[in-house]
Length: 146
Image (tube, rainbow, N blue to C red):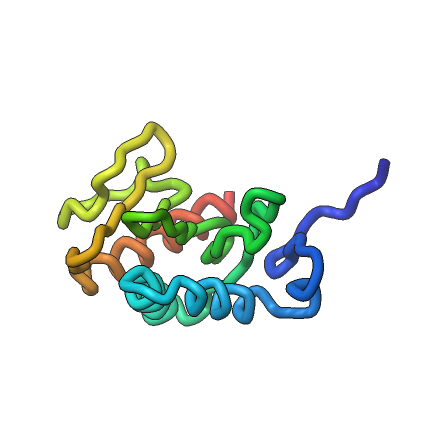
């Protein structure tokens, strides 16, 4: 079977989301939270965009158990994903294990990915977070040019 490679901005959706842009889907996803997670994910999204004005918003991994998919921010590769759970918001950096984290924002460790889990009442060091996003973009660009 011939399949074209997926491009930034492509998203697999069904139903009413098919005609919406990834940014519109993310807007709706954030708004439907209706609690502290809405404010936190919205704030983190704004910080990603401030850190990298050229960021591409995508929605990936749509499936029956999660039809809205997962918000993804990319620039020459995935920077991070934004997931919401019952008691926390998680920003997972695709290549987090390769990023320096002098402010110790990461609180979920992995051999490739690392994540920042934020619970109700937590705050985020905005400047350190934006520096982490910029470092992820720099890493993606360096690997894209190889």
